[in-house]
Image (cartoon, rainbow, N blue to C red; front, side, top):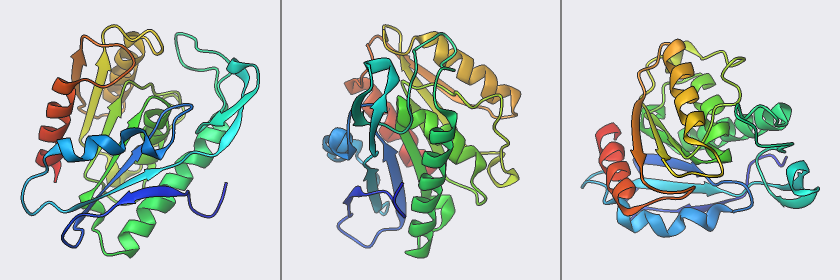
Length: 220
């Protein structure tokens, strides 16, 4: 992977005083959630820079080796979300750490940086957020899973990280049981995640955008 991930960056109108790093899912790119930004209605004074990184394109075993943007290879979708290339996930997690470092170098306090991830992106961010060595503002998991739950060693700096888990009750790509397993794993690690469900498939819905907006404003 390159020194730093290529990314779509959306700057606020005033000088940035917060950063939101938002990872897309399998087969998508950084533009996937670009259109959501105007709907997030961040409060006055919260001038967030949005960073939407693009994953590298790699062969995906589950899709007969077809090359597509991905944070890690998936051999199969099973109940535990375990059939993945965990080494690639760890490399992607370190790339997210580098993006956080770059925001801190630009003058953003780590406690004003939020990680958001959809599907595969959320799986990477569980690892990246819990193991980062400076306190972050929050971790938002959208329709995702936590494949490194049994191996992750959280950094003490993020032992009180605010976490919101959102999932669709009709998700036929990553079953809602994966969200429930993620919650159980987070609680076992000492976290107190908030959990919201929606009558939707593997996607995002209007009510969820409203809830995400409220949560982001509460953290920032």
